[in-house]
Length: 118
Image (cartoon, rainbow, N blue to C red; front, side, top):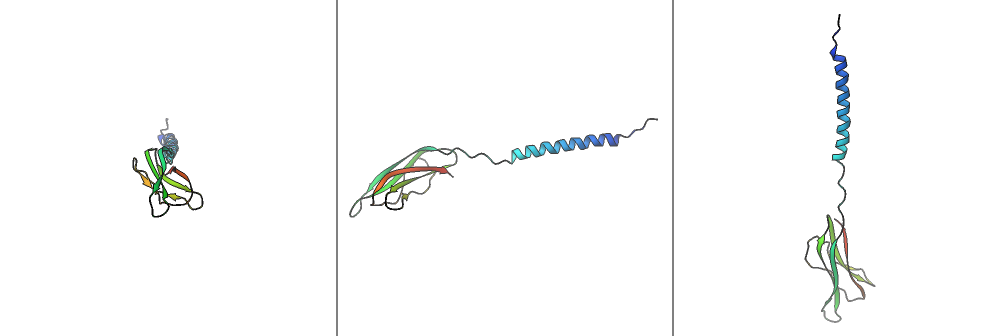
């Protein structure tokens, strides 16, 4: 007589397929929920030192502008002061717009810009 017992061999195959499916799901799930790589930081910016007419000695301030910013970048201008805290613009992401720092009458090393990740 022939014994028919499809439950055991078929059940093992189902369990093996379920394990394989679970393993593939874990691997793909890890890939799908992995954090995105940070975008490049950079851009095309300028910073110049402007004269500000005041009563008494004229002051100076930084004027910064970017025509391009990469990825998740932001920029700001800085008046690099010698004997005091630097004067900075607000961080910005808008392009082709002038941003100015506060002014100062003290000695300075000129103006510069900084680009950073948002």
